[in-house]
Length: 340
Ligand code: GDP
Ligand code: ZN
Image (tube, rainbow, N blue to C red):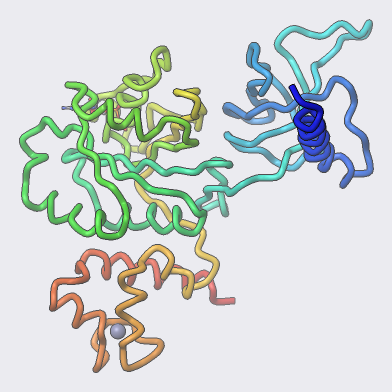
């Protein structure tokens, strides 16, 4: 090995150490010997589970009070917990800092903005012929992905069912490939399409999202041997939840997969992404934003204004009516939030 190369390596190691220490320097502290980097697998109340980046058994940790809240996917610094005579307590640690995030998927809830997971690069939106899909939910995920700079993959599960061939479903999915969003037809039951799904997930930091009952847990079990996610029949769940909408997956959890990670989160019925301003909607609706540049009024809502180029595009078949319907709903939401 040449001296030049080892010099380069030394610089790289020093730079990595600098990055690791940066959160500490901000707090006027130096990292101790024992600190290491970990990834948050899941969290429950005040405790979380993390996996050391260097490998090894997962640890149960609590957060030191000064540390910012963490979510699944966050990278953190941790120390091993020690008893009075300094012996490490097996499987226990304490998180001492949260490292900088590269993106955060979040949604609005009745109790405020709720972060879902951090450091993703791909959103895998799962849908199925049953329960019936809603374009509105797909478009909300697409928008969140665009705002958070994530790629999106639409996965139609239960593709072996006859209902998967219905024209209404094809019409619902038709707009997406032209928007750069691939649509993959798979079946967790027969295994069809799973090799391609695996290939698309390799090396990615992906999250499985979608309505409850579309087969996210089934796909997770097929992709990650030993994941052991509980698969529930729709009717069984309805009974268990006593109509209150309980889900079999109740926490967001990260799994390792072919050099990448896959995050499974509870199925949700409604998803309200965090849209910074009504003008930001264009990120998730590029075809509408583009058509709208030719509308007569700059603030056209594409309802019944004269000279509306978006409605003209719908009449010409170049913009899907379902996409405009989603845009209008999200626009109203974003405006309501923007009001003081
Ligand atoms: P989740 O709520 O999205 O996690 O969905 P589950 O994985 O719990 O699956 C919901 C229901 O759909 C269960 O009854 C599964 O057996 C069923 N299911 C999952 N994948 C398939 C599939 O590819 N084909 C068919 N026919 N049913 C499936
Ligand atoms: Zn218009």
